[in-house]
Length: 341
Ligand code: NAD
Image (tube, rainbow, N blue to C red; front, side, top):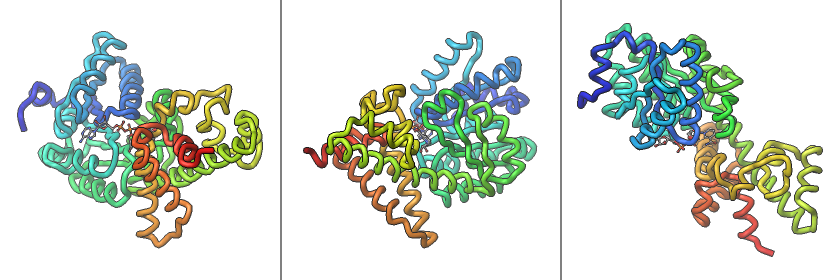
């Protein structure tokens, strides 16, 4: 490994590793989570904590470090150029990556977390805690967790629910899987980024809970779009229809918070009010529906609605690629244009 400035500092100052937190993956969710984690840890530690960031795009890491220094003058966020460097710098490492291949890369490949763990003395390995908040395939997560645990380090899967708004406000729910001792160690760090920390069971259990939740959510968002479309075709004002549904048995998050029709929730500001910008990308919802249908195949579970919903999101992404990065409630826009008046 090329000896970067950060690595040279670590070599000369290994004692700081236990006071240091590394955050890998500064995307829509990760940047907000890292900001909350670092700023709250800074207060809790009376300025003694150290922070390191790492992203595949170095400009993203640099922008984060710059913004943080502007908010907290005198506090320096170090930039790690590889996940190995981030691991060597800190005994606590949080990862927030797009999906399974990225987690495999960051943990298992050369310059990744697991080879770096193997280069550390046993005491430093035992003090290491990895928190992976990515939503990914359960089997991939379990095999990565087993490889981390084989080195003597600890790891939890801690996927989140609450979206970008929850990440920014620090109100996320974390669904945690792993040994109970690792869960207890992760808890105070997770509390800096979220409000509800739910222990779901052994490694992978947090992901199972997350994938089942998103299966339900993905189906609901489509049927809310269908209901809102049908009502309007029959002459109903979307505001009236939304208020009926939201005070009746059809109410759900997709109708009452993430309603896909502009103007339907006058006192709220869902992504549809910003041309579906922000929120939870359709491509990520498609990924999560795929994770659910894969689990259904491997467990022999019938998923007729889930399979159909996965196909609808796949059609949205392939037929209207602009919607791939927009909030998944844009499935409403897709349905509306697929079946014009
Ligand atoms: P994102 O694509 O915005 O961010 C991912 C970040 O990871 C990017 O900055 C990317 O450069 C970085 N990255 C990719 N490969 C890397 C590597 N090898 N090394 C270092 N960095 C790497 O994704 P996001 O919206 O922040 O979502 C992250 C995870 O959270 C996903 O698994 C997603 O399903 C889940 N999630 C997202 C939301 C949401 O509303 N966006 C809500 C709940 C859960």
